[in-house]
Amino acid sequence: MKKNIAIVAGGDSSESVISLQTAKQISENIDKKRYNVFTIYVKGTKWVLKSDNVEDIIINKDDFSFSTNNKKTIFDCVFIAIHGTPGENGILQAYFDILNIPYTTAGQLTTAITFNKYVCKTYLKDIDILTAKTVKLGKNDEINTKDIIKKVGLPCFIKPNNGGSSFGISKVYDKKDIINAVNKAFDEDDEIIIEEFIEGTEITCGLLKTYKNEYIFPLTEIVTENDFFDYEAKYTDGVTDEITPARISKDIEQQCKQTSMKIYKFLNCKGIVRIDYIINNEQLYFLEVNSVPGMSKNSILPKQIRTMGLSFSDIFTEVIEDALHRNNILSKS
Image (cartoon, rainbow, N blue to C red; front, side, top):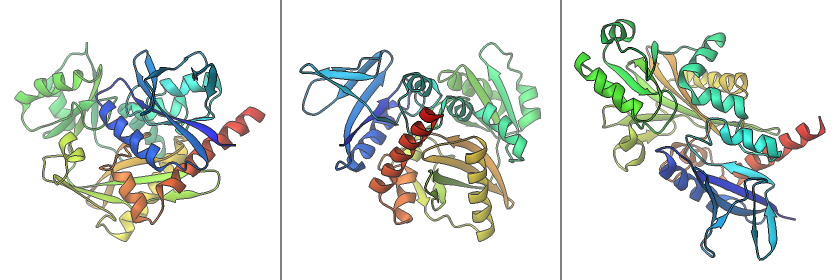
């Protein structure tokens, strides 16, 4: 009997449009012979089943189900495709834990940690992961530009502490531009970080560990015409070259792959994850963990999977079956 899979998309952040593209890619590539696939759109308190055949159907949040023609449908597994809140910061994970419904990402604690850039970097210091110098600010904190420059230097990056897809990020070269950049970041989040700029080659590593297999996908080198890998560079054709496999030394390649799996296991990540770095003077600087990475046609991970000669359908099947397996183990414990 085919299992019912809910792809949960949308969300409450600026990344919702990317989430819908990710959900479309996932829906088109999930094995329909094995699974019945449904796309659920989440926006605030509005949770609805989206379908080309019927009008939007309201989801019952009491048990995450829907009903049509007096027939109730429940889900065997949730494929989380929300970038940002509430799908990448632990909120949905906690909800599905309460309902005992398996899902395709790490649990509530891990996703909360990885979504908070400052907390994640602090955690990773315990395993000697190299990171840029960073200052964290809240909305009520005093902004002392002199102290900021003393700690991180110029140029520097100013970005939301919680978020992705480069919304609210600025690269600042001059002291006079810090306040505007800080305000821009605060438009996206109540916490921001100001990071030292490290010049070098940006690379990213996609990986997946299931109860059956470990995959470390070919690394991607990011070369953009823009000043940095901003939203336009990520999602506009022709602005950025995403070179897979990356043009880096074998030593750095192996170091990156080993470090990425080390981080994945240390943080107890699950499902498909992408970890970003900068290479400077043959040293690897950690940037961030993406616990729900983009899977749209313009995203990096699909290119890595194709380069490795794997099919999306097979990978998505492994992700779903691993989530079901984890849930069975927990249910028996």
